[in-house]
Length: 188
Image (tube, rainbow, N blue to C red; front, top):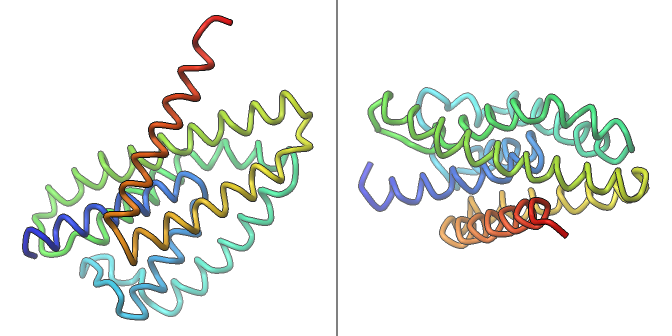
C-alpha cells in the first residue's frame, strides 16, 4: 500500500469510525456496500465485510437500530451498549481500510484512531441525548436521534467518496463536542 493510499485509508477509516459514534451499524453497512460496489478495497482479513451476507445482516441491523433510537427511553438503553459497540465498529472500520500493513500497526492504529474516535463521538451523542431527556422529558429525543442518523449517513458517505472532506467534518465534530463539554463544565 503506497503512502497516499495509506493516508486515504486511515482518513476514510476515521470518518467511518466517527460515524459509528452516531450509529453503530449504518457506517458498517455503507462500508459493506462500498466494498461490494468496488469503490473501496478491504483488508484481506476483513474482506468478509464486503460479502452479500454481511451487507444483508448489517442492513437489517441498521434499520432496527435507527428505528429503536426513535423510541424515547429505548434510546437511553441503547446508549448503554452503544459505547462499546461503537468502539468495536470504529476499530473494524479503520482496520478494514488499512491494506498491506503490518498487523500490529493496523490493529494499534485501528484501536486508537478508530475505537477512540467512535467512543468519543458516542460519548458526545450520549451527553446530548441525556440533556434532551432532562430538558424535554424525552420528547425531543426522536428529533435528536434523527439528526444523529443523518449525521452518521453524511459522514459515512463522505468517508467513502471524499475521505479528506469527511475527515475535516470529523475535526469539526470534535470541536463541537469539545465546546459542548466545555460549556457543561463552566460555572453559570
